[in-house]
Length: 252
Image 1 (cartoon, rainbow, N blue to C red):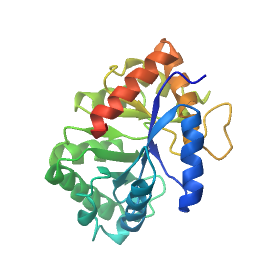
Image 2 (image 1 turned 45 degrees about the vertical axis):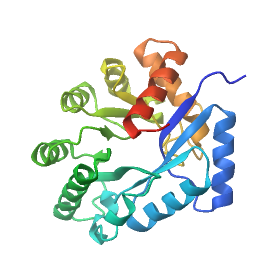
Image 3 (image 1 turned 90 degrees about the horizontal axis):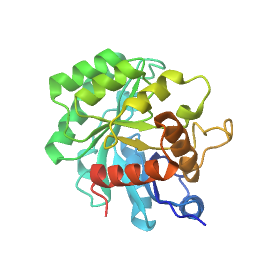
């Protein structure tokens, strides 16, 4: 019997509404009763909101991923007042793939930080191989009161820098990978009111399902990895991350 409630605070549901509905129901059977369907472009953000309108327990974010920064953010602002939109993002910097020029990535990230301030919404950050510039932009623009580093991949130093700025850290299936001791050290030092768990489905399936298509229902396995890193019971992580997601996104 499932006795713990979970929030997958960052996933990407299938485009097809019927398929997405099955994914959500599958997650609920595993105790995952709240999902945040994350936008990565203006068009996809609109699609996330449309799905969230139809699916119980699903909310959406609206943002432009650094990969799509070259296409700009025209039309994003109109999506932010929607009652199902709970955050700006995912947005940020990705210097690993560089699918958009770095100067454009920085400009578009700054614009979305400003929108989070303007609409008083949380900010969801994607950063890869760009810690210094990410922190510099947040310091320049002013970090929104509720900011999360999604799929956090740093170690204790990056975790401390983020936490000192008031940010939350969101841990994905990577925390279960044998190759990620620095990430587990970061999870161990994060305050109990400043972390969440996510799948980033359909990517990054946790151990023991690594290599498979990820599912929001497997956020419980991420939670187990975080619990082991923090030296606490799984139920503690379930309760803390449920409450943290509720406070962060303003969920009811």
